[in-house]
Image 1 (cartoon, one colour):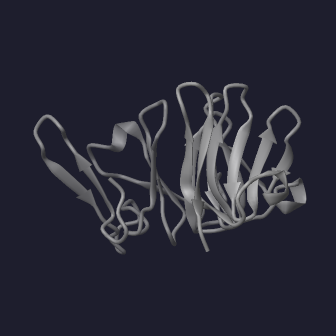
Image 2: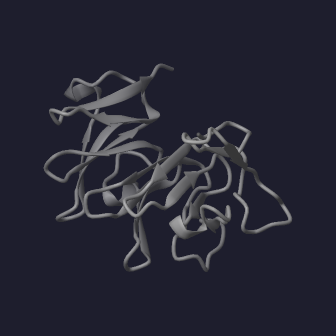
Length: 193
């Protein structure tokens, strides 16, 4: 469970034991912040934690019992460099890429190659303020932003942007507020200003 100030908590549903992981400023292997708005368990069983103010943390599957985190986005020597420490959503696509929605653009991290690329307005994204990510049944990514929804085509790394003039409600879409139904429809939460 993610929290807003209490780190993250792991609940063993068999024993009902709760383990809480908190930031320890003296331990670089602890979680980087206690404000943790989003969590993703990837297809390999690794746990990705997005923070409000300190980038992304990765707890590899083999380190879960030890409570060890690797921090990303805080140092220029990381393989995953983020333009913002504010993480809004983390998503894994069907190709096993990790996508990170930040207030500084949309970052794709290719785990197998240990390579990252950030997309922003210079690449055609509607705004750098990215709130949510979801993949449709055809492999396109749909990105909720503060200026509508952007559709990303991985084949040519292009974006098509949709806003009020396309029938969307006016305003900002919600943080981590994207969902794909069983029938393949995409739902986006909206943040009224």
